[in-house]
Amino acid sequence: MASGLAKLGNLDRRIIYLLIALAVVIPLLLKLVFPSITTPIVQNIFDEVEALPPRSKVLLTADYGPSTVPENQPMLEAVARHCLHKGLRLYVATIWATGPPMIENMSENVIQRDFPDIVQGTEWVNLGYKAGNQGVINSAYSDFHNAFPTDARGNAVGSIPMMAEIKRLEDFDLIVAIGSGFPGVKEWIQFGGDPSGVPVAGGVTAVEAPLLYPYYPGQLLGLMGGLQGAAEYEAALVTAYPQFEETSTQAIQNMGPQTVAHLLIITFILVGNIAYFAAGREKPRLGVNR
Amino acid sequence: MAPELVFSPELSRQLELWVGAFLTLMIFSFLYKDNPFYKFAEHLFVGVSAAYWMVQGFWGTLMPNLFGKLYPPMVRFAIPQVADQPPDPYKLIPLVFGIFLLMRLIPPVAVTARLAMGLVIGFAAGTNLTRYLQSDFVAQIDHTMMPMVAFHPDGSFALGASFNNLVLVTGVLAGLIYFFFSAEHKGLFGKASRYGIWVLMVAFGAAFGYTVMARISLLTGRMSFLGEWIRSIFS
View 1 (tube, rainbow over the protein chains, first blue to last red):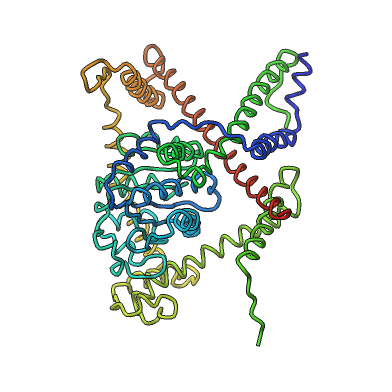
View 2 (view 1 turned 90 degrees about the vertical axis):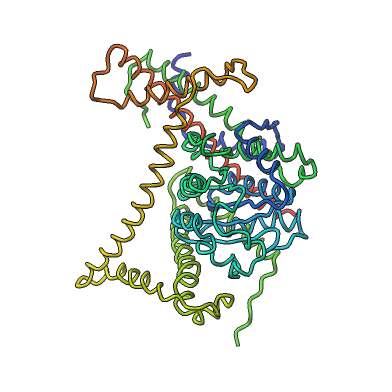
């Protein structure tokens, strides 16, 4: 028995990869969905958007690239969908060079599909990418038009109707920063929210989430951490507005494979530890053979 | 006259799916073992990334922020909306410093690059210092000063909030004690240091768990993409 368990310690890693792949593919094929319960740290963001009066000004940033689309894109789309449904004015921008295609995808999936009648320039504006990392936020704090002189299509922001009320960062009612690294949510807190006093909500990859928890709740209104955070926001959205059940459940659906894969990894950790101790009783060894 | 190559949206989407699917499979092939397909995809990714950043830097930064400000009519062909703006002669300063940075390539005048680097480092250090001090130091200390005994708005004792605050405050103090090396870690100080290690281990465990979640999310995203590709073949 003990030697059988010990052999597990030398299991070919490719078998583990195969099992993980199956743990993801099978739930995807079966469309396995588990209920998502919105936790207070995500609910706070939803409630803040919900409480804003119509025509309030929300700055939504997409500071990430294609490598983290499965985690960040559902957050961006769910928040955008919620803001537009509530009649808020949406200002979308990015300080990542890889951000513009993410905003384009959001525009296709949310605006063209669910809000085809809204007008760019009066109800939403794509301010595009501006280089300069946290320097852009710093500049936007004192003079927003200087930091974002043109929108994504090259129009001078002075000619865009909904930009007339925006002079400084503090003219926004809420900043929702969706990001996956530097510069991202942390920089929007440090250089945007803290000096201007505008509430900042965040949506980040799971890898980054533990680094941002210390800012909650003092400096960060709420945080969507990884796919789970995105699924929680989607759950709050479709509970309040069931009409979005068809279009805003991307993260909820991907949480099925996630849950099964996590259960498998927990099993690996348990079996690996048992195998390690079983091998230790038979013959002391240092480290792993591979 | 060369024939114009026009892709319909449907054909473009198909092309995107097939190229993306093959590159995904090439990268996944590394899980079996290193091979030329993986190497090809890896090098292609590096090359495309470098090219993307270069194009973004030129069209997204230099054109609108430098050339378009120095002499707006110059960018009329690309950004006609800003072509009639008045020129901004102050942009000559970043132009000169940008040229200084490139002077690194010419040894006799390479020293001028230090001026530009000094400006970049000085600006970044000055800006970051004040904001980090405010947001990551003062504000974080402020938010760690929590009441050990918390109450609900109606005046009743809040057990959950009190426990949370206790864990937060003692966890921060114990973590700091673990990294305090000017006193020997024994007695009560040693016990606090030991508690600090446990706090750190829990934090590392949470970070590891989140990292696993992130990687599985990305795998799910790729698998969904491959599923879309396979469906497109049979539809």
